[in-house]
Length: 227
Image (tube, rainbow, N blue to C red):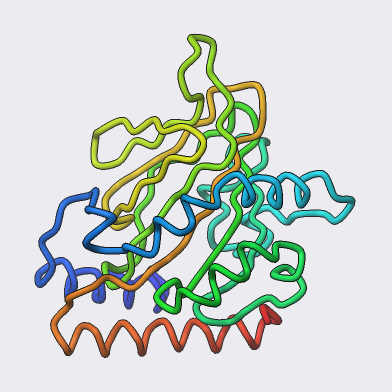
């Protein structure tokens, strides 16, 4: 039987899908211009992320943070680890202190409501899935992308039936409510910065609903200790 969460997610998705007809990939300069500041600092962000990866502190797997995501995280015995810095408005202060450059950028970017460093193990596959609602967009800045056997970027995002390969220092702003899956076809860990940002220029009612939904998730995150 479907859970209340699943039913709510479907209802919310239908509401947004009916009102917001946009492509899978969106223009960064018009929808999230602050992204260019993150791109300009990408080498410093990579150094901070590599320091996190090398540290003795264990970085949790995604399904250890969110057990409901086990079907896309715990599928093949390979790790997808997530270092959370901000969760729907709730700052993880200890983690932000370990990434001062990133923390400063986030402090100046209120539209970025969540921030995560994503570490994808060699040959990890994340099966096809969809995000819950179109009120937010996913910004991805690749920080360390090892090559595959043919010298191309080894990390592949399949989004709405199209392949996206982009290297270190390159980024993409996309709608994660479209079906998508990810592979790391390389022999090393792929590191990416993932930001969830508010979608601009929504109708007022959807804008208010988005704030209500994300604030509610933020409260749950705080109660679970993500602060």
